[in-house]
View 1 (tube, helix red, strand yellow):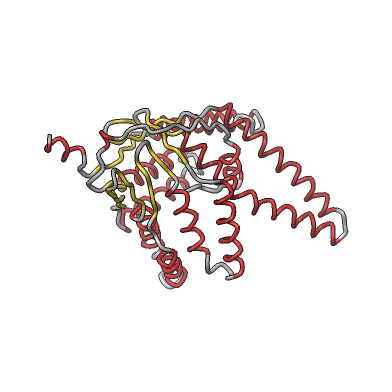
View 2 (cartoon, helix red, strand yellow):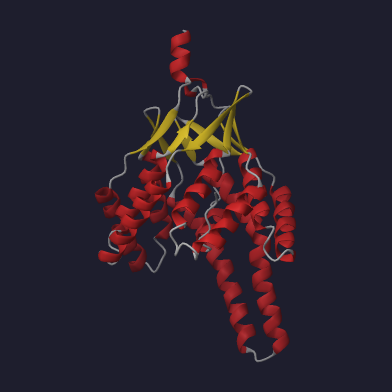
Length: 323
């Protein structure tokens, strides 16, 4: 029994089995249908894309599953784009009014709405994506409180503005820490132990060295950034903490970015699906779960059947990645 336990808790890696040719069929079919339907097919295209990537990702010989539906995403899609349509009409009215006060009010309302709605969108997206994601039939669950995240986000945003952006890394770390500390997977819990000052120095070094090295430092910067996010993420199982590890080197990132750039450049963008698959394959290949996680003892504790995709659609509209 001890030997079996050791095998269950050894280091683990994700495997990604997606193929560029397979994803290209999905990608271009969805692109065509989205154009033909003036964008209304987007929710179904998004779900099909997510389902493909989830089912192409494996841990311990078991694939992940995305349970969202086009109908759920479409309902959120209609809400979000309806609100933005009204906001844009109000903004255009203000800009064309010729009155300085009306223009100022319309701009203020537009940007104030974006700021105030963002934490609610992040909360909704985290809850929807987690409830619709599973592995071996076990679902993720997000337990964050909407108003608690709202006040945390608003305070961090205001401090970032007042410090002319200097507080940005601390703000980002606080939001990431909140989201992960309220994420559950069956009887597992997550946390993020990164510090704002570490992220600040990573970003500062990039600003100082980017031009001095004619951009070459970018590969080391992305390596440090990925290591910061992955290495500081941890799982707790039965009181024991298990770390993630990003094992790629700057040379690996150089190869990924240069080849991806050349593929996009010389195919005039047609290679985009292959680039996406290459990137996901790269990311999963270099993420390792350290020793200590017993996947055989993960059990479903509770399930949150949350089907409102509005928050996730809002982040899509702003091209904002959750984590």
